[in-house]
Image (cartoon, rainbow, N blue to C red; front, side, top):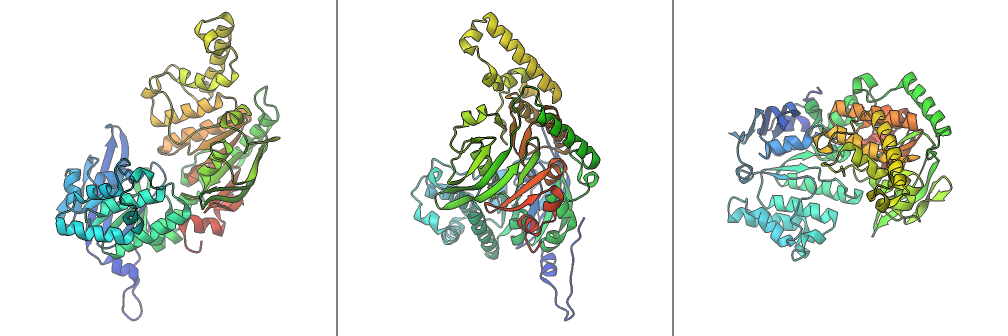
Length: 547
């Protein structure tokens, strides 16, 4: 682990890092173990020290255990082992309401406000956890000062606020309880870069006003810019800890956020070196001879610009996905990655620029027309039918290849039966390729296996281009390895092109041929994995500082 550096100046004074280290501990977490359903180990001996008056960042990829840690501290989850001490008193086993009243309040991920209530009613609800009337009055004055827009819109229904305003309301509601410690879970998630910068300033101001903050973030640059100290979780364990300045300069942190480490050290998710070269050769050959399937074509994104009102989500973004290649689109939260996928799949219109797939302009087409050209997509959130078998879930994607229609199928006409048998045969082939049991009910499968089912369903549409949105989000290491193998095998066997959006950099750098990096809606780098990993602009975007 990266240790705490205590720098003593020549004149005998202590550095800012030393002053932070000398503060009294307000929150202590010791050897915390948490399991889900008695089987899945989410935290494995995590310890955390939070000095009074500081900002402590908790970093890590999806599935690292960050949210689980906050839920355990706030009492929503009961740890299997370990202790939590706040202001000298044990919180282990305490009820969430009692923990909130003691001065430790969480803002959950996803801006979980009461959308049907007004802004005023949401804030009053938060004030119910305050110790007394004076605390509520002081808290309301603080919220009004921090978020003038909420004061202006106090009579408006919360569900009609913008995403940034809803995040302000979620934080304001928590502040109404008058907390000593504020637990913030992914506050920048899904927000535009301009709003993220405002949010960073708000967190800094809350801390200056005397509130200790524990900040869970995937946006490491934002978190390290505002934090005094930080830890990095990896598969439920503390992998790195130290001051924010140390982590910004740490090679180990760069390894985890940019996948720079050698594959064996980073937990190699896919073949590399000669093995990866062989895989690329097989994929290129398959792309050139698709055996009757939809052929992979070149995807050209040229000057793509998307604006929502006055906010620019993408600004003149250009990149090319070669036929049969594995292309990654990466960047911090709010960089514009999901917006780009939504444009490519026809969900969002463009403001300017073009997207050409083969000879077809996609920006003027509806989603079903784009799918008809051989473009398939997966989503971060699972959308499978848990009470149906894997086979039935996969057959849903074959409708594009069926001609008999539901009436003929329902009447079990001979032509419909033959067509169904042919499609079932193809589905079973793809399921075998991804090592799936088609007779299992989806609801009985592990999370990682269900994600592979969703991948298989997209492949059952026989695409030439596959758009993957966070395919390993929330997975543990072994599940990520299985998904990496499934994607690589599918691409090599089927000759498809893949455009991948993913936060897990070790996964991305182990599997991608080429990487495009977005930040603040603009392209800041494009090249091979080795090239972008060491690009100063990429280092700055992910970790802040000078790179």
